[in-house]
Image (cartoon, rainbow, N blue to C red):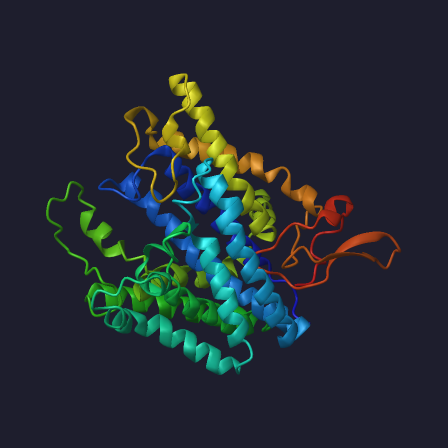
Length: 423
């Protein structure tokens, strides 16, 4: 039976914190990137979140299947995928907007995308692992060449927008409008690669570390070479002398400014290479910050569902403190269509990071209560109270770790020693 890999929890926890930075930015009225180093890197560091989410979702699925078997894994992926799609269009839509205009705006965001990826993975897991890896690699490596051709010629239908081009659609003249932020094709390839990577994470520690470093370094070098020579992999070639540059770092900004929507091959290499290479270092990270990140990483979906309304409420409080009133802009269709922010709603970068720190700190405190200091690790809250060798009731996972765990209520009363949880 595979044992729990601490570095996965730490990487997920770090992703959670970085994600909060970007989502606070949405309500701060600041652009997604900009000509200054502060604005650019505030956005760029958060690019590591979505690839890490999806890749680790695939890895967690492999770990689940290694324990429960492929048929049980396929059934779970179908249920979890559908659950995430509904969650995005209901609870999270309300948390982003605090309005009831669901007829004209429904965000197809990262949770929607992961839901569909899990549904696709439910079919792929019945194939040999090598075939899954090959299909994933083919999609990630080739979609920048094939996608624009496949969806050329003015194709703007709903299916094209969901699969590759993004944009809004209605399924009919009398149906709610859906706005697609994350088109699916590149991410299906990535979750397949993450699933195959699960085999690496079941290796003994030294072998696992070697493979993580090799894969991460090769991916990072491939990004640097292909991007440096503008060979292939991104629709936006970088420019060593960007016109109208206002910062001496403008060439670096251009180099790093790869396409996220849809996620280009170079975007995925740029973000996943360093993340995978860092896993052996994260495994050895000790201390208070590491323990905090580990808690976040053990309950990622519980954290995600909480952090968006928490940030939204924090933005309302900031508006009251700064202006004495709540800006109607805060009840617009965030994050895709809020319209231009009024000048008095735009924050400074220090305020953005201060609010992020406050929200993340406040969110940390209820999380250890969910399942002692372990956090819930079951894919859908499948936590059982079992007997320890000493006869005391404890909290044990009935399933392996998943990237999208929901906190198990039964663990509110369960405590156990750190380090004894199965994957």
